[in-house]
Length: 379
Image 1 (cartoon, rainbow, N blue to C red):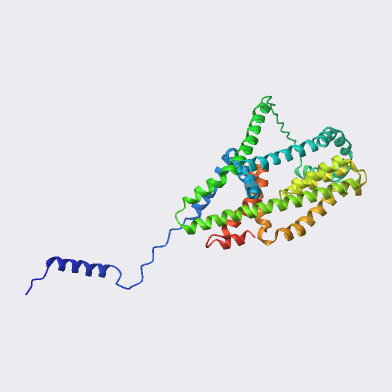
Image 2: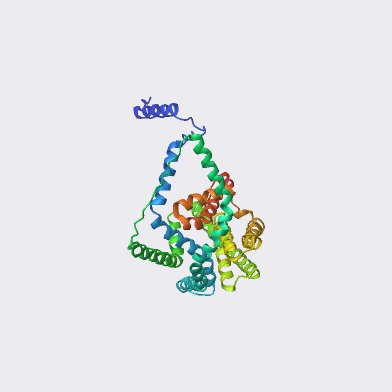
């Protein structure tokens, strides 16, 4: 009779102890513990930290964002030139040179009427002052009446306190701000060129760092969707705004304005339409002032602003939704909040980048599991 093996007994004891302490054979695996959730206070603090970082680093971020945005628009053109066996370096040079030449040509074409308007503006405003005084006269009389009532109710004359603010004109401010502005423009141009030339290769190398094939496919799908939709959006909006500017210039010509000035106001109407809500409000105020300056009759003075409002209403409520479709639709409330936030952070550049950034956010949320509801919230 063989003696029992102590090592085997020890192993059996360990095995039975492991089975008793753990999960039995054939049982379902134990679910991992739930991930801890961040508190609302931590989320608010993180959001404030991100907002402060975006505001504090705007001089660094804005050239990069603008260059990436311009390169994103130019990539489909570069791919078309690539099919024609044009090297990417030459294609990027041609696209960037064409954009700069168009901007310079447009600026030189509009420089003369804009300069004439600036020179004539003080004289026109002096002529406009009596008209505006007649318009605000009832308001001034009501204000005086309210002040008299408040003075009688108070029992004594309230002394008016005037605050005089003095501003020291710094003669060196232009010398410091102009080179900084030129450096920012050059940085945007150079970064756009390098994004166009080397961005595709950098994107492939960054995708190779992702661990799984599924993550690579998802990232490629998101990037291609963003590029396709943003390019389509910018191209469509540019065509619509150009047509709106031409139509408005034609209406101003019919009202009697000279050709250069009508084209200048048409170009301004098209450029302002890139910033939803904010741009049209500025356009209405500017065209209303222009109407009172150029025309004497009240109906003629209101006609430029009325025509601008009519064209903008047709474009925003009929043409753009039909052309772009529901996929690019954004909630008006979310859009206004985005314009307020990005305009407060980055000024005019933030107003121009607000819509593309919101569209990119929506496209990313649509493709992430569990985030579809947030994407629908933006619609």
